[in-house]
Image (spheres, one colour):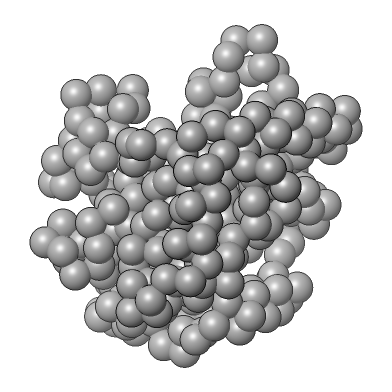
Length: 296
């Protein structure tokens, strides 16, 4: 595989980084080397939760996604990118970990539900990159990504975080085999969120928004659970487009600017940037029967 010299140099660094530099390795992966594909993977991980009826019911009851689908979608991405960009133990990182704990403290759900939600952010983007990025993630990147989410899970008091990517995949697949199913609430959430994706597409592609998402999900169980159409020719076109994109990508210089700059989202929701005080849901779940869950 012939690639630009700058990509080759970065790949060598990502193949053999010092293990203690796991946060930098993951940051380089997300913001530079595999930036576009990791973003798509994070995007797809967001939908994955709607195919789990118990999780969908909790999200639906809160009402944030139906009432403010754009804010919920953008804020979720901003939290992830802020943590990756700044580091878990930075000032901004600690503020956002505190926000995550406050928001989830009274959310109903089992330990496995919380673990699954967090692992979608690890497994789904990695698998997308393994199948569709201009290169596959390195073993060091897999280890760094796994360490990042294990550390985040620890700070959120989520027990039994997998120590390796292989263990994370094993839990992820087992959980989905038992829990993915149709639900009216999950489909309502999907319908609300598809509108956000549709508005980001060029006008000629907007009628095909659902089929484009179906093509990217690549999983009939999830299409059925979420009430999405079969992708048909859109899938073949998307795969062809990705191959062409990757051929060009391998010949271009490694991007010099990070994929994300904290405080400057560049979105229509925050056109002039944002402060951390603006991030997070309006409706924060309250305790049920005076009890909290394990995220306390």
